[in-house]
Amino acid sequence: MTKKVHYVYIYACLFPSFILIGLFMLYPALEAFRMSFLDWNMTNYLHPESVGFDNYIEVFKDAIFRNSFLILLVFMIWHIIILQGASLLGAYFIYLLGNTRLAGFYKVAFTIPMVLPGMVTTMFWLFFYEPNNGMLNTVLSMIGLEHWQHIWLGDNQVTAMGSLMMKGFPWISGLGFLIYLAGFQNIDESLREAATVDGASPWKIFWAIDLKMVAPQIRLTTILVLIGGTQQFSDQLIMTKGGPGYDTMVPGLYMYNNAFTYGKLGVGAAIGVILFVLTMALTYLNLRSTRERG
Image (cartoon, rainbow, N blue to C red; front, side, top):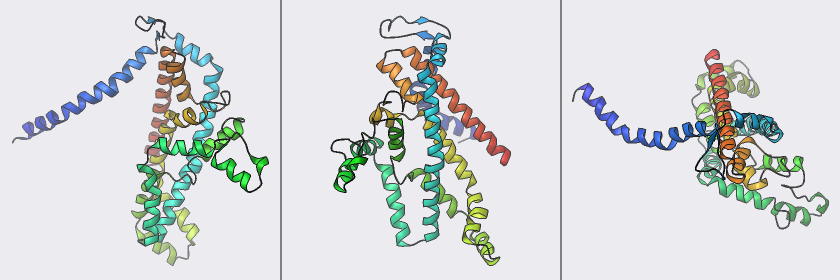
């Protein structure tokens, strides 16, 4: 088989995948961009009308939408600092344990949640915060702290956002944990041994060697958090529905509400395009920073 025929055979095998990706991923994205310039709602579903940039103007004038980005920013900062930090430290401590049974146990314990549907975890935390029979208020009642009881997801913005942030405690992401652990395990042990011989403390070794060697993994997981955090809204949808009021409303949920609750499909598409542009911009800036540091 010649080299040319070999390539033709490979592309022929990949062609069905290209068709499916184009049909179910690229086409919907391009169609959403087109829809964002249409007055498309439930009353003119079959005959949408072109309105130019009116949907984008309406979105940027909307105070709820603008405020949703501030709320998203708070969640993003939390995810990057706390969730990434917990995964990094968890991976580092297990890396220090070496090939022990205890390390193997923790590896399994931190990765098992990855096989559970995210909806199951969210529903557990929804029940945990349930005001009448939920686990948290029940425990507070049992230990005599009834005055600490709250409607955790509907009392006010502080308790609602705090409750959403506490979801997933101890905040070790299975994927981030595995990425960091692989990074630590690829560090040349001779570097750590040389630092130890020179009298460096474990803390100094962590900051000067270990943390710098996993910098590529940190940048990778940061990109994933930025992309996932910008698009994610399932927790708010299921646990608070964006409330109380609009105190936990994020752009993704507002897009969903406009499209499928209010029937303003064109406006929902415009919000989706804005989120797409934001995600691409964040990814580009992060990749550019990676290249400059390289």
